Length: 181
Image (cartoon, rainbow, N blue to C red; front, top):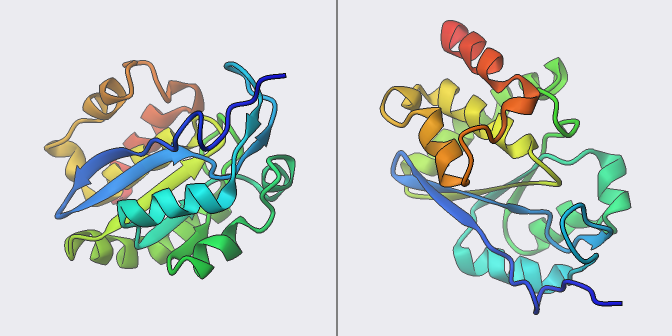
């Protein structure tokens, strides 16, 4: 059986300028197992962490649930990021759903430090298993009020689909965030 590995499929990071810094979006580093789109994954966590370090991540936000970390074969992911010198935030979002109230509270708690990172030209990597990061990025845009100058549609289009991310009610989520924000 053919597998997709960290060598055959180098970890790609979509780099999006925000404020003075950058937000990077990618798949779950080191993931193992079946894929909805192609051959199964058999990635190497150490190799993927090296790519993330070379990109310059100061902080990492993991949006996968604990059970997904186990399913993907990377229950030690947070530890690997910390050992790589990065700040790790675990903010689980159920795939294809908006963030829970608990996750939104955690987001609000770390949001100021993330914006400080971006304001000092830092880099924040966000990863998930599926499309949860589109919800998260929409939410971060709304909380920063950069949506006025960088519409969410631009972000969706940069991913190749203007419909990307709409499965998790992001338009409603962003609207609420704009009002409260």
